[in-house]
Image (cartoon, rainbow, N blue to C red; front, side, top):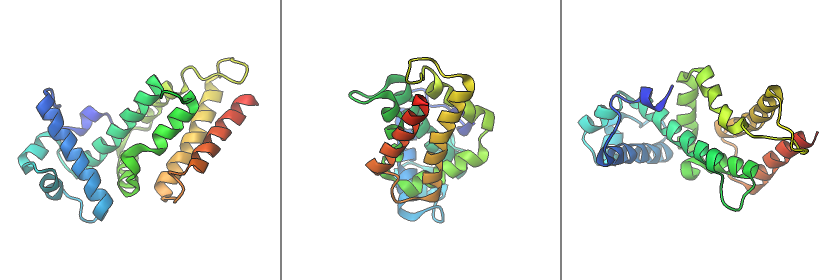
Length: 190
């Protein structure tokens, strides 16, 4: 499901986008502080300092907020995939961007990710891998086949997704990041 499908109205002006950003930030804060049990549109609107009408102008329900929150982080990750990160190898930059998503708010991340996965079209989610897979080469500089790119991207993403959904305590660790980089590089050398 795209970000557009999550929303009733697409913010076109800076002020409207700022309202959406405030709502999403409030949602992340609430999820992190209280979990899903106390998460509802009234609580989000109150935390964001916006009227419930403003919230409903953009989000039809709390699930749409969760999906938009996950989508916002996915888009931030895709920006790193596309643009890279200064001083980091491309593979490490992509892994680090994913590991550091949601600014360390692991409870919010787990809930939003679960909501996105529960409602998203698997084909649409898979299309997001195209940017990640584009331009990957093996240790000899040869482009990966479609199958090789699939296996590599899904292996790393599978470990990342499992770490998020299982709530492992090492998700933010350098050791986990290093192991994922090592996994990818070992595959590319073979």
